Amino acid sequence: MATRIFCTAHRRWPAWLLGLLLSCTAHAGETPDRVLEGAIRGGDHQTYRLLPFEVPAGTRRITVEFEYSGRERRTTVDLGLLGPDGFRGQDGFRGWSGGNKRRFTVAATDATPSYLPGPITPGRWSLLLGFPNVRADAQDRYTARIWFDDRREDPPLRAEAGWYRGDLHMHDAHSDGGCASQRGERVPCPLFLTAQEATRRGLDFIAVTDHNTMSQSNGLRELQPYFDRLLLMPGREITTFSGHANWIGSIAPLDFRVGSPEVPDWNALLAQTDGQGIVSINHPVRPSGEACMGCGWSAPDTTDLSRIQAVEVVNGADADSEWSGIPFWERLLSAGHRLTAIGGSDNHDALRETTDAAGAALGAPTTVVRADALSMPALLDGIRRGRVFVDAQGSRDRGMTWEAEAGDRRAEMGGSLPVADGGEAVFILGTTAVGGAVAEWIVDGRIVERRNIPAGAAAQRLRFAWRGDGGRHWMRANVRGADGRLWLLGNPIYVEPPAK
Image (cartoon, rainbow, N blue to C red; front, side, top):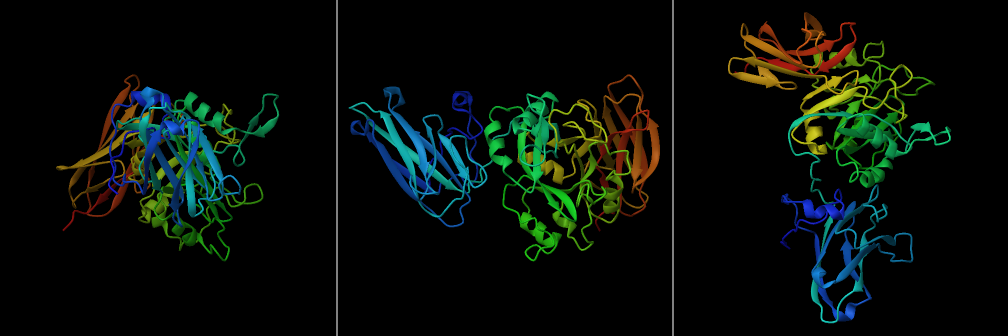
């Protein structure tokens, strides 16, 4: 049924913000799967009504938008949801929002506050309407629109393109994150403190990546409307005996039992991700043993790296240590794999203030992504495209860009540039707030030039000339402090022979 879609309450927007929304953008796939309509008359005053609808097998999420007329006449309709068992069984009452929400969603892993997450059992579900007030002469109508597995995107927290700063690896009470309680006892650390601390540290986004679980996703849904300057992204750290990897951007079920009959190897695991979100190899060269079982990456060479999008090259304070993931990542680049370098604090205590070998504060390091908006799809797209640099020390203001030009062709970080044999190319490093540091130009993993960045000026642009040899190469830049510590790590531009 083709139906007009009204701009109504969204799961990220509390009801009192609706009046501030000035526009509503239509998306493909907005046509609802079910539309329930009916009349509201005076006889409905202080009664209840069930609106049944069938949920097909395989449904993972139910989204409901509800509208009715007559508010100016004090008509009031409350809203709830019942599963197939009604009020009497385990798959029964799923929540009651009264009149405080016009839109809600429920799924196995998460639900809009007022509603309960849980299995979506096929069968006859019902909206539950309550009519606290209907005047005797009322002649109003309601419309309920229902989507199964709604794929419309949430509105971005910020619609403009820019460099957005975040942390892609952390833990809280939903796995092994702990912090001091009000009495100073070590307790599981509430998710709220993670979001609050990330905001205090000036981050634009975080991915909460608890071990092999998505139980935190319901908390993220609840917190997002309050944290309307910080994008909260779902993730999990896939924790196996042969390596760890973050899967960011999906809350789908995942069987992580690599080495079991059901999941014999990493290829079987990665096939489950099915192109959703991004997968990054975590802390690839950490030692694996009793202190941290499976922490080092030991997946066999037959693992299909085309299903992996990124490598965590800096984990906490390891950028300049023997546990740095940078050499591992550069070997993969030289083997032809275009994997994006990212960083993650691996924070296990939201209240931690320092970063050292024992642990990292939130945002240290910071992953900085060039994205078209502050939204999960835009950020994940920026990561896939390699439009990323890592602020290894977790500053709030250090920045870099990496561009190249050859004739009339241009490329930016993560892109490709055709350069003929003997052709000239210029690579341009732009920096912000790194005066007095040292720039490194790296070709195929080898530092070919170091250059001092003048102190004083807030922004600098350094140019590096290169003559092509007709081969394939990758070129990137680092910025190091005067003490030699890594400050900024850039992703490559890929040089290719011109197409024939």
